[in-house]
Image (tube, rainbow, N blue to C red):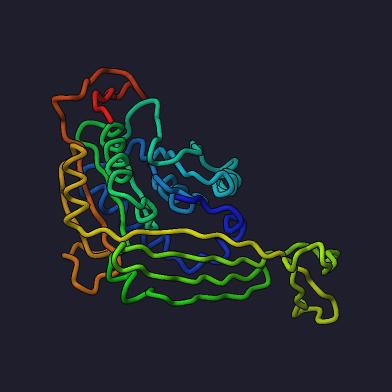
Length: 295
């Protein structure tokens, strides 16, 4: 799981079409539907904090975890002086908290970036370990249909004043893997010469508002991978992690997924286990447990 680096600086710019408000409404609806009216909520794969800050504004005490320090730097800057959000730079496959939380959420297909069943099982075990008794876990997933039939081998490109990107997709059906080759062209200032020393990494583009004045852009490349999982596999892994399966929904609805569903939301619940030690302590006097699970 490779974190975003160069893309972090323009992530919010190019993702301005993401319906965060609609997602927030839906996640809050599910939280309340399953009994989480308030309390501490952890977001895994929080990125630049767009969802984290919105959930904070809805009254939840938020913790955000992401493996990209670049993304978290932007999240902290956005919330500085506005919201009391704890951001932690951790890999969700081995994250740690000081106590339990009322709910864990994860959106924007963050779980698809976990590429093996073994790693995903470990994430689910950790979520179960850090949830309050009967706490709720809500996360979304892109489906195999989305990667194979909708995204496939498509190339997406966008050009703006703030920069440009080329997003090349490749889908490996047998492995159910979506490979993303991302090329970014980010502003490098107006005094950067195009020379042999740059190795061809700089390109020149004239600004629309001042066509006589060139702008220089540095090229950065990143490769990322996402994996599709069947709903049956997700249910098996959640139950193996000790959690209770609650529901799966077609995105932003309470309907069952269809064959052409591109994104699903899954709800699971912490289930008391005999192999866990429940003791008092943790955040705000909540119960927390030390898992006796082994690897």
